[in-house]
Image (cartoon, rainbow, N blue to C red):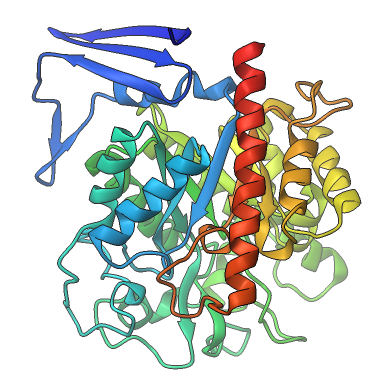
Amino acid sequence: MARISNFVVLQQGWLVFLLVALNSPMVLCCAGEGEGDRTGGKTASLRARLVTAGLRERTPMRALWVTRWDYRSAGDVRTVVDHAFELGVTDLLWQVRGEADAYYRSEIEPFGKELFGRVPKAGEDPGIDPLEVAVGYAHARGIRIHAWINVFPLWKGTEPPVDPEHALISHPEWRLMDEAGKPQPLNEHYVVANPVRVDVHDRVVAVCRDLVTRYDIDGLHLDYIRFVSDTLGKGKLYPGDAATLKMFEDATGLPGVSTTEQKQAFRAWIRDRITRLVWRVRNEVVKGSGVELTAAVWRRPEIGSGQYLQDAARWLNEGLVDRVMPMIYTADDGQFASDLSAWKAVGDARQVVAGIGVYKHDEQQTARQIEITLKRGGGGSGGGGVGGGFALFAYGSIFESVNPDQDRSVKAKKMRTQRRMRIKKAVNAIKKSDDDG
């Protein structure tokens, strides 16, 4: 007989939810039916379903990032979820926003181009709501779904979108501009939104609220929640437009960004503005909803804060996010352990989920880094691993994907198969250890 590890009863009115965890995953039983909250024609759960997270605040994740390139149809979505279930995944970080677009049915932003395999026409509809399919099918499999959004990217590519409703076209003032008022040039990477603007923050908050109120998601996952400076020209001030500099002066009393002290203050101010957005998502959207708020963060807290103006240690310690997922994507196990320790030193290790870059690994290394992550004794800030679990980047490095750019050579397919076998073996060992413990 399966061991009952958790039993939760949550009652609202005459609606009673019985949550019984039979080993893993958990099973949700519902006595009766209720209206729930309805927004935009969708039924929002009473959030008892998010107790399906299984005491999530202290339960290690076995998570998998699924990118917007990994699905185009309802069949693709179900295949991804089935594969995740077979691997023993507990949480899917499901990308729903890439570049101010939507991989769900949104009235705020247009559908993303990856659903079509090309830049869609204005108002074009792919005929499915992938997130709706993913949430329902994953929950039926006992897997939690976190809606993963890219926060500041506006567009990727050298040709602009054709939909006039896309933010790059409809809100040119949101683009990152230099001191001459020239926008960041289109390129093969991302052009980004100005991270200090109130109206940019308003859009992100609106997107998050739309997701939390209209879909039965278990979590909201913030990515690119940093100053995305990878492709910015050297010697230019970004954001350097007059409106931004006026905001800076009003906030700090400093009349410009020319001296060393002013430049340091300017970066500190941008860092605080990014933190302000995280605060708004927590307090205006997530608070009281039962939805978990997580963030993909830089591999070490000091690099994130200093270079990318991402004060994630502060977010963690001030309760602005429930967990951080440092992206420690490396083939060097020593660096991996060191970076993980750096996160343990600044916060509760139970709220740190190690991001593992499977795409950089041979067939054995991912399993080794899982072992480093979950090393016993990891509950505090001292030795051992971390208690938050791990997240694998990404689906297409483990399984065959519909991503047209996936390497389909015999060698690559063999590597994915071998990785998958090793990871599954490691996960099964973890599950057995948990059952025995």
